Length: 190
Image 1 (tube, rainbow, N blue to C red):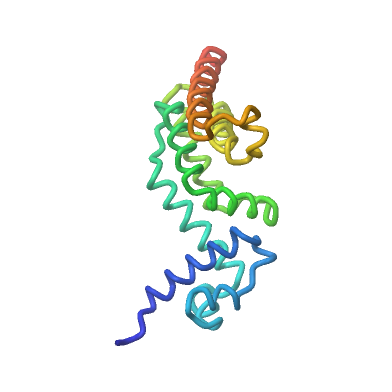
Image 2 (cartoon, rainbow, N blue to C red):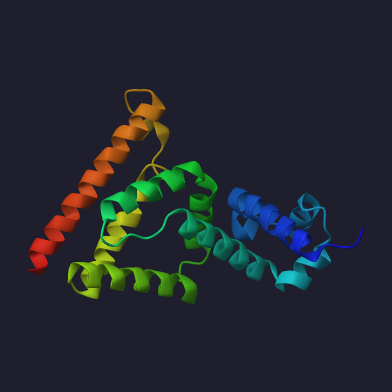
């Protein structure tokens, strides 16, 4: 049986995701990633060039998966918020990876910038508002979708209610809030 470079690359991306989620870019060690992927360190450098480039590849890969899981719906931002919340609560590692990215590399990559500007433009065109107002709505949607996962359990569920039921109520509140924000933004722009 021959060497499968695609399988090795995939194992490296998966192992790197786990490592970066756990300790961030600065704390990650290529030897741990290689060991977890049943590969050698040289494979990381051969496929990705550097630990930083591997981090970029992991982030890009995971954001692509998220975009595939949660299709962007500028005409229905409340539903998009709910779907994004579902995806982020289903894969807390992705949110944690983006938090590490924000801490260790606060600037946006060209890919991130382009994705956000494209979405803001789609919102603007769909709702006949400025791109700036579209970006405001997009930032609100993203923040609302992240709120659950970025708030400590003791705070988001102060009465100790059933966590799943509490998440359902939170989801409904976020969808309602985004709907109200969209309505208010459209009234303001009229």
